[in-house]
Image (cartoon, rainbow, N blue to C red; front, top):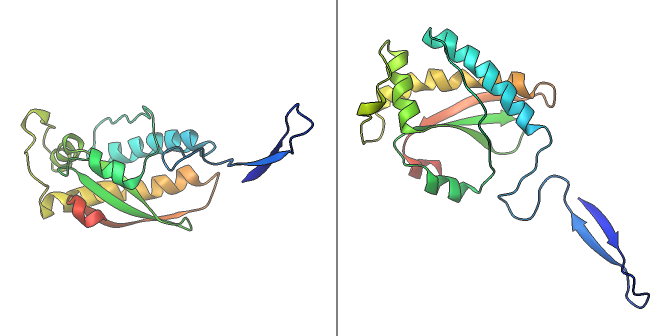
Length: 171
């Protein structure tokens, strides 16, 4: 944080000091990370290649945008029918999450097992242990790609801790 001295035209008023953060604006939902968009674009490109190798199909991932939000807000947006991989990012505090909504999760399971992605018949249920086990390899492939993407900024070690479909177990 940097303290900024402000002054007014009125000579009778005393100068005041205002706190300004270089990394985030007001509130937990407005984080500002310099060049984070470049890190995410690099990750998208690297992860596309990794998925293409695993699934033996052409895969394109693009960064459509990103937003910062509190954990509670994120949990309210999720349906609970997809998959969430919890990734440890040493030496950073806390963990990261790789989130697949139900369409992406079930499609990736079908592709990993040699089928065709059928987004018309997505089951309205939580993923089974077998489906989560299939997805764990796909999510685990994101760890080395995260390391590559962060390499120019920070050396991290990414490890998949667990994969969940039950949102209550994330808290």
